[in-house]
Length: 446
Image 1: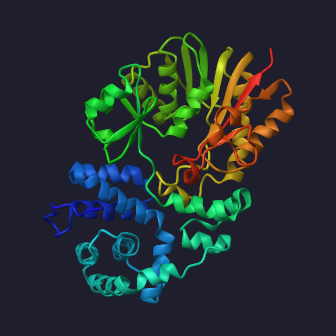
Image 2: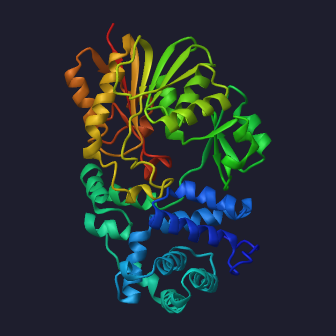
Image 3: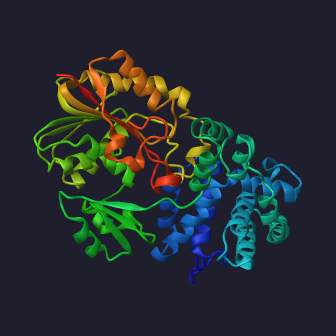
């Protein structure tokens, strides 16, 4: 990616690099979410749209590859990264990432501006940053090239994932697919916008935005960076950033105008508002969200998107829902392992491991099933790649509920069929170029 021309007058650092450095510090020192930190820092420094792509590449790439970067830094400094001052470590991580994994960033810019960033926050550490990064220009790539990925432990370091994720995928998918999946997690995620058909069409939205993209139904698959959340079309409710896999969930549930639909764990509202669009805003959607703040945001999202049939209920999804519904979407909390490319810090968070989530997912699935009328349709979906949260949850549910049967989605969408249980869907980022989603569709007998 080419270097932007504008510079940060405070430290002689281009704004994109200053934003990335701030994001890296906020993620690893303050526990911030990378996407929220990126948008906040981009607004704070008034980052030009043309610079957002580089800022995203630098910040997300550094966060994603931090295990590999720390290995290089420890080799070059001869000390554990935990002993380095935090601003120094952030500058080194950012610099080593550019020198190791990017080809179109001039080495002198990666070194010089990383030194300036360290100098601003840790003046006495700037010399160390300069010396280490100068060595890194010669030695970092050979260090990384020497890493093997034959075992889960080796692959975890080479592809910068926690060992438990590497082990999980080696066991579930086999070594070749596990390696390919981890490599895909370190590439830029596919960027997609869903045109809100309650207010516009995909061709109309594309013409209005005047961006580089191609159409796939209601989806605009972007060919260049675009800050959707700063666009007036976002405020006007014309679009929703949403992956093709996430859009498939609503289409597979297939709600019809006039029906009653239950959406459990509905925030932030991408799928909820998609359901409303598929229903042409006719009928009722009861959208359940436990967290008060997220429930309020969901209601505002529905209003902005013109989804007037959405009734947001702020309560626990495991609780009984009164009444019966034609269709139910169960989209429970999960380990998010299918979205590691678009959520670069998610892999490093300790919460949300599969073994801690499966019981809750079972409870929510049972609650959704109890609210489904005879002959109704239920979709169970997660954005993860984890047998314990996906096929095992559905199999256990079906064993205990003989009045439910499973549809053969692999026949409907053979390109996305599950690798070991082809009646379900499992999108895989390295295979399908979209988020990793599990989708099962169940029907209750009449």
